[in-house]
Amino acid sequence: MKKINYILIIISAFVLYGCDQTIPMEKDLYPQSVYLVGAKNKIIDRPLNIGYANDTVYASVAISGSRPINDDVTVGIEESPECVTEYNKKELGSNDILYKYLEKGTYSFPQKDVVVKKGDVYATYPILINPASLHVDSLYMLAFKLDSTTMYQLAKEDTVVLVRLNTMNKYSGLYYMDGVIKPADNPNDSIIYKSPRNLQAVYDGKTVRMYHQKNEWSKGATDYRPGFCFTITINDDNSCTLKSWDKFKLISGGGKYYPDMKVYDLWYTFEEDGVIKKTRGFLYKERSNDDETRKINDWMDENRKYDY
Image (cartoon, rainbow, N blue to C red):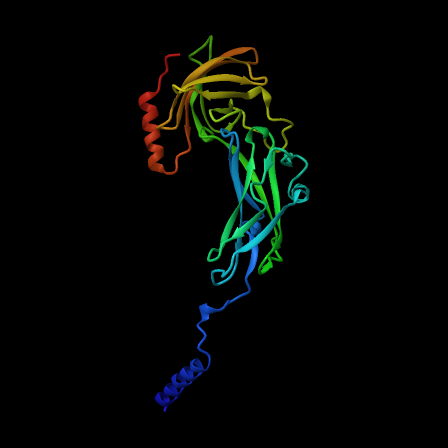
């Protein structure tokens, strides 16, 4: 009896299939809509290379659905500066650095609309920016929302994307300082200097700003600690030129950059509280795993110098 029932079920399934032979993937399983990629998470990060006269960042438009689209879809995008203001009010406190919207004239749009081509699921919207117009101690955002579409409906939720701009160059990023600090008149009285340092891209593609000991701006600080900054410029021969940034009392300094190892071998003399001190050490870029960390530690041990 059970076998008979099972056979009847199979036969019924074939009969139903014969009545409706539509293959599931030949129709939409859910309504197609146009949306901004990253809008669900509100913010997308885009690096901006300060070494370029102009750099391009991208926002992306996509079309949801279970099948590729059958025709080109033209999507209109508009700016939404008020969304950056709203983000500052809702998400940031009185001691936070607020995000600025880029000033007019510092960016442009090579194309008016985004065209998602037939058979594709997304397309990009380029934004051309002049990186030199951004100040290292300011934070910047752009905001966009969808305006129109020639096909399908616009997404009804998560309709705005905030583009957070992060200036960089090939020498910037998270590094670690491994060295010593000694008073010039008492070299036996040394302080071990081991600390993460965020090298910030400034001016061009070959210069970064570093903080000596003190960390960069943080909540509760009234400024960017101007008495503790200096810049490092990597010259064509990989030698390093150090210059004071604002109020840091840098007396002299120099060094060499090792591009294969992504390491700075630095030395500099400075004045602090009326005392002249000397710093010597390696500044190495963050490693991705333990094996790479061991390699750089071995390299520093082999190349470390104490004759200063």
